[in-house]
Length: 362
Image 1 (cartoon, helix red, strand yellow):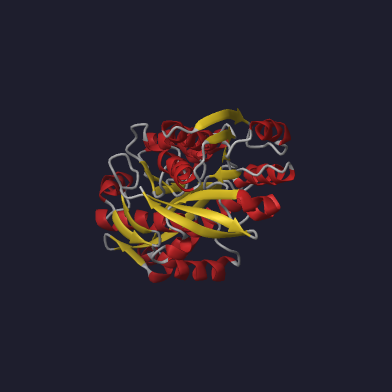
Image 2 (tube, helix red, strand yellow):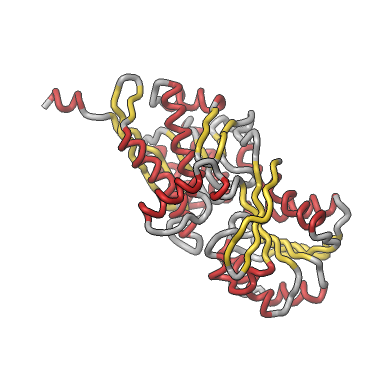
């Protein structure tokens, strides 16, 4: 009995948090699947840290995209003694949860949170593997200004940390380049009817509209804009730049230009091969965040190997010196925990299919 216990693998828990219920559960599940695929692959290959065989276990929690639930989930992951956390998905959940991980000394790697505030709180535990809204908003605005020669815009956000943050960054760049911002309206992330806002915007006749929010609201927003015969291009960020947008927006996607932090999956160094493995395992297409969550797990394991330890403090100590070549490219962190060389990809939709428009290195 004692011998078999001595030979047993050390189980190391990798925490994961994202919305697995609610309107954007498809994005949370996509992110979780990416992390799960990495865990399964690493376990299959075999992992040894400090001479001890290690088995990874994904501790996946549902934060329902709710800041209050996110802090409860964060505390549960701390209590579960996870070695690292992959998550959360939303900025509005990642930011409040980050305080709890910081207090516990657990490295948190978000594959999706883009609000700059996430890494500006002075915590040593916050890292992300995607570019920020301070890069994404300007990339969208610059395309509107330089390529489409936009002179007037209307801005709408969903009042979340993500949606407002992205819309504000777009607006800031637009104003700095002489674009007239006709109005800035606020809705919420549960809204379904945007006709009052859109009717007002139609009267303003802007060249373009910026919508900050997820696909669950961004889709109906664009569909209703089309129904009201609004011709303006609608700019949206990564939360709405999904395969599901065309299902939610119908032909309204013909007017959409949207951005994603990072390279397009087809352009990522290991993207096409990853996509094949993902589809074979989960029988569904990649949405957005799966490759980033996958890389985040490998980055965490790379830190364990470099630290030669699964101890929280030792993992955290080597995280800033990460230099990891993964599916999404080379990951190196700056002093805040942000990517040193961020990339933004811009997309449009043709006949409901998303296709790459441009790649911007920030």
